[in-house]
Length: 168
Image (cartoon, rainbow, N blue to C red; front, side):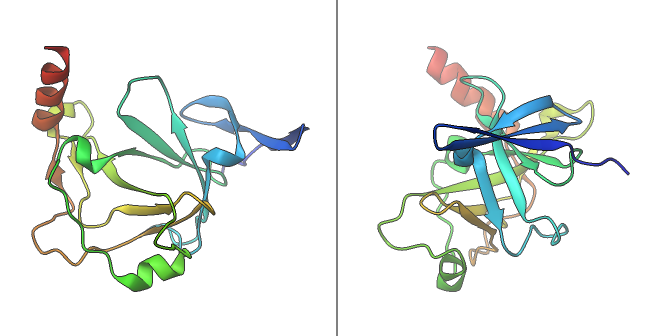
């Protein structure tokens, strides 16, 4: 079992965490990147602390990196990048769980699955997105009430078309 090596650096009221990960090597994580999932993620209920990692500017994907398991990281994406009419119905109780107020800034991300050696078959989970309260950095994986969304929504063609449109 791999252990997490992390140390906190203090500098002018900002605390960063230096963490060794299996995917990214040693990374510096700021408080603005950290998220707390009090209920964990579906299938990973014991994992509560994560960081959102952007690997390069302009890349639409972010990684949800566990702060307790260096090998656990999920690619995520803004679902409106490939599904502009995405309109998830999220139960009020999920918002209450993360103290989400009507005026709070928020984000919704979809976890992406990329089959090994077949990126053209990548999918996003639109049925179980991540709801993030950006004010308090609390997050929750929710199950939307919309029946039209699925856990394996194909996204490759939509992303390629969007990139071509932006390049034109």
